Figure 1 (cartoon, rainbow, N blue to C red):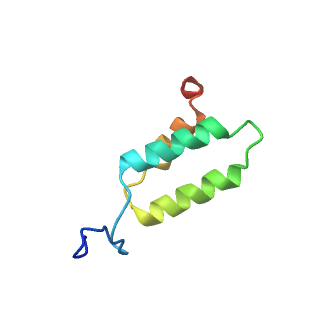
Figure 2 (cartoon, helix red, strand yellow):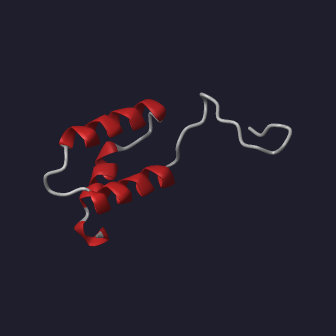
Length: 70
């Protein structure tokens, strides 16, 4: 939704898309180590699932764990 000046307004009904989840997973992949906090990933997945019921945590975690991205 845009206001009268063309500025994007956030509302409670906007959901992130697959590309957003993928980019976040890539960032986590790049900056998390083997000793990273597993709970962080679980909580992110929980949050994303609440935001978008179609969110696929398995695919997200696969991208986070993909060693080829580093």
